[in-house]
Length: 198
Image 1 (tube, rainbow, N blue to C red):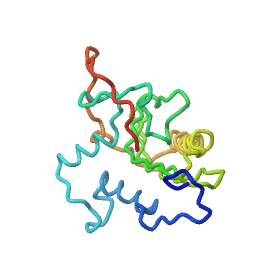
Image 2 (cartoon, rainbow, N blue to C red; image 1 turned 135 degrees about the horizontal axis):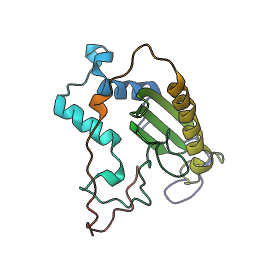
Image 3 (cartoon, one colour; image 1 turned 60 degrees about the vertical axis):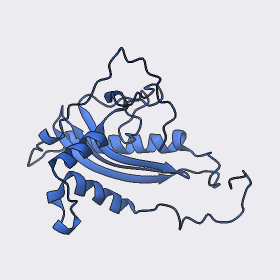
């Protein structure tokens, strides 16, 4: 569909759109979170404050900021945590997800580092799924709710349950990922932000 809501019967040209491979996205997150796990030339020049900033904002819930006031019914805590978001929109107790997601034109992407402080486990998981059963791009009729989100959640659960049972030779040190987040003042009577988007 074009900007005039007319159907264009030809392929869509993505050459002038943002694009990056899933592997590159995963490597960027790994480089940011675990710089010593990648070659020196692949590391970002981040100081301690930069790293703490990234850790904080990659994992913060909408309800954990006093800077902006999000409508937490629409932007619930697991809003962009596709791999771990269940139908109740909650994450399991002790779980924090450091991630970057994207959704456009029927593509859903989640690149995540998932920590579970309760069970002392961690893992990285990245996936992209295309959910556009009618094959028409830009019509805002995608199968995110019926196929995409359930698929990514189920994929996350397979790995999460496996990691909970897997025997580890080395236990992870998750201390640097324990972050103190803001808590909204219950007396904050500002209007909520209700229409933020990807």
